Image (cartoon, rainbow, N blue to C red; front, side):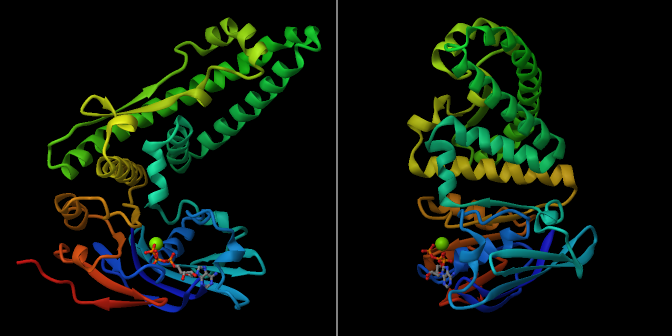
Length: 361
Ligand SMILES: Nc1ncnc2c1ncn2[C@@H]1O[C@H](COP(=O)(O)OP(=O)(O)OP(=O)(O)O)[C@@H](O)[C@H]1O
Ligand SMILES: [Mg+2]
């Protein structure tokens, strides 16, 4: 999959931008607050999702304007296609190949992208919820049936938790607990199986990407860490504890993805640059897995990724990912010198202008 052009009108500070990227790596550089992340965010909206910065649609329209319009031309499934997004009166509308979609969410599955933004460092730095969400979000993109499974599990879990809180006041309710346990164990076991099989695919690529980033000097290992091997038995065994706590102590909602760098926990031992490299390896592995399953290499959006990385890691990102279309933002002109081929663009006051890449001899 490849973007041929993107036009932004009244989108944040991108008042009137026509952007024609190259097929491989595209670097957008410029000072702070010039519109680099805004451009990546505009591309991301075409995946059908919300802003990766968590901004409400109404705040995406340029201040003082009544609406924003984004037009994308892209190459996918062996043909040129187009998509448009309109943001007006806090509403989002979308068109695909000139046909209005019933909802903008219907863009999902037509334009695939993976995004890295500095907030995603929480994947390594913070608690297990971030890592579970990463696995779940990736699986939801790959398998629509997983969305239903996950939603049903969450509903059953909330109902079981509500029941656990009521039981101390109404002891007779305890008799209904086994019904919820059976439902929760069945869906929970399927979720764990799906996550484990996805992680197996992901880990293989993430390890090899990390090895490339670190020039073979460090080894990344990922594994799934379960709260219970037999969830049905664990729920039954933990009933009294769960009633006392008022919540369900075991199940996929408590599991984790363990990240080890050279056999030590990355969360506590990895350096800043290593943590950044790990998140990048995870995201690039996600892109590769998605590409294999859809048959289209997704667009890769890397926001502010180069800082904290040494020049050999920067070189890997700028010069070894050219099989995919990649968009990288950065602030330092020196970082752009490493780029050997591809597109170079300067972001300045909401304008995106092409520049001649500096060839490294
Ligand atoms: N709705 C809006 N209308 C007009 N301008 C906006 C709107 N939302 C954000 N901006 C402006 O966009 C600019 C920020 O753009 P962006 O986040 O893309 O910067 P950046 O180039 O990525 O900077 P940095 O290097 O700091 O990450 C800010 O000047 C901000 O005021
Ligand atoms: Mg930015």
